[in-house]
Image (cartoon, rainbow over the protein chains, first blue to last red):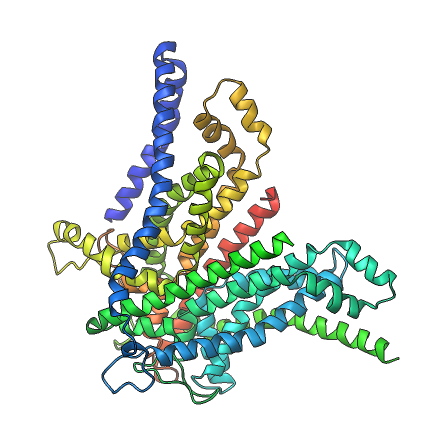
Length: 310
Length: 297
């Protein structure tokens, strides 16, 4: 019950705040109070600087640690050989699986998400009942933890639909996971397109469909792309939802088809980290993941800058 | 004629696409609840939620999920205690103190923090945080071999992982406070620090609270990073430097080998702990939506 004791101490301290404050505000001579005010000012300014520094330091240290330990082991071709002999580690199958997974998820989630957003923004008025239902469904979907998606994918796609531990099960699970993200970013992008564009298009005699596909969607592309890049990052970084759906192989191989098992790089890195003897390879895999994340961030910054200038 | 047909046809296509998310959430709910709830009932609601022992291999097997619930709660509380002050003060710094040039450096760094996969965080925790905590754990615990895999390790790691969420939402709610609040405080003779902390931060309270709630949601749902550093012993948490298992780790640890019906309730009990997790997260998200809707961040 040591934990409970700690909680009691915290509660007592919290209860003491009010009386202490009362004394502080009412019974101190003015001169002391002025000095104290200045003192606390400095203390809090220091805290702000220190905590902001800690945020930067934490990230800096994580990146520095991973890069300094991983880069020396990022051997080429070693870790990147296509036909590695058994008992050695190559990252190529995992990287290829990751690319396949990302492509398939985008293939499913992007059209679905974009078309859903079009329905929500262009085809319904405000206060429509369907819109409320669909929005709340997307909100709930966005909040579900990835391990629950993993459980669901295992029960539904793998067992109930009989897709097995496969690329397809993993892809479908991840697609549902990415749907709310694509929907939300596309919705925001569509809403940002000025009404005058649509009015001008209608005035020229274009129908609703033509207006959506020729005028509204093209102008919303930067926003949609930002969502797509976020989704790519999430698929690359996902592990909990994939372990029980796409599989976690000890020695990944390039999947032979949609119904073959596959481990993405993140899942593979997790597997490697479970073995003490593959420390260097784990660091190397972490470096590759970091580089992918860095590139995606740079890409989204680039797109934001490029389109905001136009 | 063709154009008209296409118009109405595509309108239906859009509608069907939009319904997919509703369909998805229904199927998820049906499958999880139909898998988990019968098992919970069979184990007994009291034995499942309040049972302190998780021993799926014993005969008779025991499926008490309370240690995992407490594990999740303690780890999350620790993450909040560590991550929220740092995150909120960083947001204050970013919104009010920081020169534009430094902002251009720090903001991308925070965004990058959000993009790093949880497995990379978990690995970092394994190779850096745990060895740091080991001497401390050895001093506190004389029984057994303390490894440093602990609630504290998981809390520190999650504290770092929730930073981007807390910073992002706090910053935008701090920026949403009208600038004349700040100017009025300055005009009354308050220093810049005091104006920000005593006027702006209280005004942005609901937004900051929403940030905390969203951080809690992240921390409760996080699986791999926690699994890699928390030690994962399925017993009631003792203290910060001992291991604990979260609801999420429980699923990921045992699902791969859990025997299903009719041999054992193990698999369904794990789905049951998934249901508990889902209910937790749904409650947290509802709190978030409520906070945001009420005040408008």
